[in-house]
Image (cartoon, rainbow, N blue to C red; front, side, top):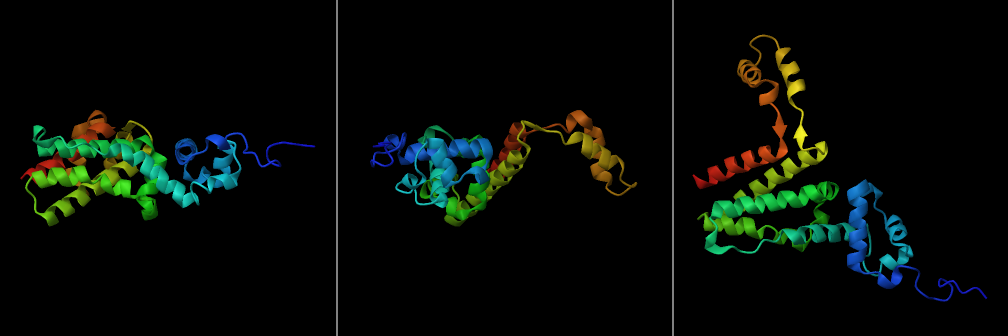
Length: 225
């Protein structure tokens, strides 16, 4: 008589250790390596070497898996309250940097979170606390805090989408921009032409880290005023 586990009712290899955390960790690996489209419940089960049906005891569908992934990643972005030891503007910058780092560590997941509201779990919402806390300490009114936090998050989201689409530390903007500007008819965009030519290829070199810090400093300076 054949007794292979499946027919005897025993769990397949891997099913005894199956948990929500194990499933999400495997799913995150697939998303990081191959993108959201590569993630299916069948593919996830194959990676874990379990029966696909066993996954549904922990996560009912792919949407639940994606929400769980967002929770897994964003849970690490909750920052402790430093109190008055750290100025509000530095607290705000720290929150922004941590949020951006979380997104760029998992760019494929970031694109999904930013484009699908169903992937936003309670943990993602709680990551807004450091932003609200810092802005409250800056003396803003409740409506101003709400609008300022949303604007800053939108900046980080937009920056992260651009960064994820390039997948490199630097963006070679200079060669194409110089060529296009120098090909413009005379007086078409005189200020742009003058500044681009003054900067040249070296001056137009773009680094994402310095670009983010520049944008963040400009935004915080506006709030400070």
